[in-house]
Image (tube, rainbow, N blue to C red; front, side, top):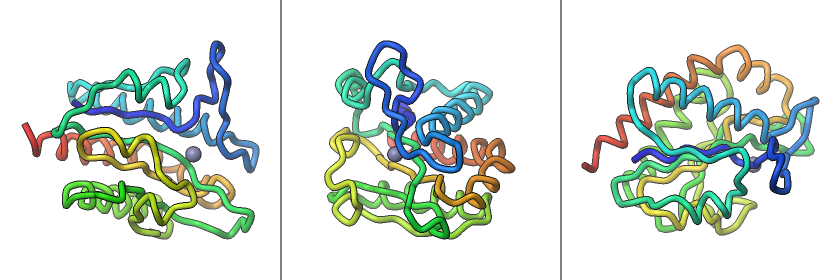
Length: 184
Ligand SMILES: [Zn+2]
């Protein structure tokens, strides 16, 4: 099964809202929800089932609800942020104990995102190398990636994202389906 979620529940009405990073007049959580929905729409068009987080769930609630397995594909969308507004690019995060498939999945996502958006490819790093430390998402089973699509603090990254988000969502859906089909 495919598990697809948006980092930060910026639109919750019932649980405490988490906007994520805020820059250039945008909330990271809003952008992540938008892109999650675009990828889900592409999966619908491909008639591929998936499980997604609700806007009324915190990450902890979502992780407690989902039951992933070794053949699952687990992806969560975020945007990066930095005080230096020139910081740019896409980054894939994987677990410290990532296997070959985790690494290949994250590499394909970052390669594709950088190419489609025309932004820097910052590559794939493991959670230990990230400023986030250990990530709850990485304790799930399956092929897991947390993807920073670009920098919300970089106006050019945002503009390129807005101009190319539909085609990017299609490419992501194709990659997700490909990895979902690897382990029956
Ligand atoms: Zn985030």
